[in-house]
Length: 518
Image 1: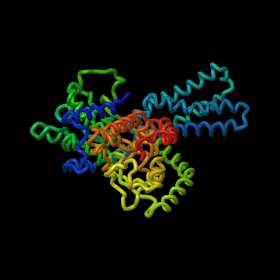
Image 2: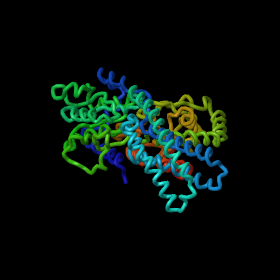
Image 3: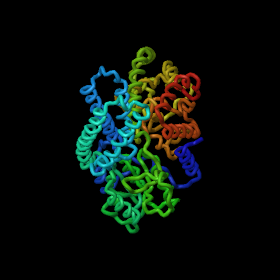
Image 4: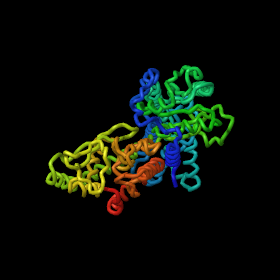
């Protein structure tokens, strides 16, 4: 079954074939589209290396866990000693209490963005949560008949000193967080799509909330200046919706907010078809909507409700988990496969003149061009660096060794250097395509509308499409369409387990699914 993204891609492709004009992104030369002066000025307000609020919150939570653990452990060692006859009881408490405290803190919102910036929001709730955790400890000791064995002095000191340490820790982190927020490093940059009264009402609501971590830098609107103001609540107009796509490509934008009313279904869908290819959060403002959903249906920024249209894939801790998997497993693969790499290099050198490796420009994350390493599989004087012509069965440009390493995908192994050392490739992801690659004579982005949505994550050496047989030659439209559908499925269903599954499936797919690999 197709996911939402794959379904949109198929729908857009059919619309294009029927001659409809709606498109999922600007034309293939979007990168040449100039930004307005206002957009260039707004781009300068966006941090080039912003900090993730979720990661900062996670690190603060880890610090609180460590603080609670240290206070309890030091009190135990100082007052009772490691050789205490009931040390197991205290060790169990020391293991359970810090984790329980952090879980309760998270449940009541003590790691929300606004709670990281103000002790006024945090103090009373921190005291209540800390008291609740210790009440749980005492209740557990009572119902297990261990109350008499647990030192009341130790529990009391841990409660008092632990709370004071937590307050001091929070005051310290709040000082840092406020500084990062003031400098823009801890704010999510955002733009609005759509102007008018709805946009103005939203900006005023976000400003009145006082708890928003968004930094609004402007708005985009397809309507001309005669129908759309050049400023909304102090925000400048930066261009059209197509300009918004280019703006997001060229900056570290975090969020796009569509301010159109929910009832304007056709206009909202048209906006979504253009914006869904971007690796950013896309939200629909529900602030002024008369149509109401259950509270759980909304995302909140401060106290202002939004509906999630698309989420940025692989953000925050997911991004870190995938990067760690890439570097660790990639390094192990480089070491383990070094004999294969060496033998292949020798074979290429003996088989034909020319370098062992070559670098090819391909599409990377967010459509950025990257240079990927490959073993040379063609004769030097026939190499096609831009992949303007597909390799076909019996292609005279391919060397004898080249036929074997292409069939087995050994020619892709040097891309492990991209993964481990450059970080512009992942082990698993949509395969990086050459910029001039074609299917049935047409550039990929012209054959499949929404093609660039596969670049919302880093490309990979292997992927869901490859292990399902969609690799090699793309001599028909259907082959690239199916490949893109599988890529979108992977993006929308990513997990560490899915990556490990694909890595495990890859050797078997290379041996059994070789159709079209020349």
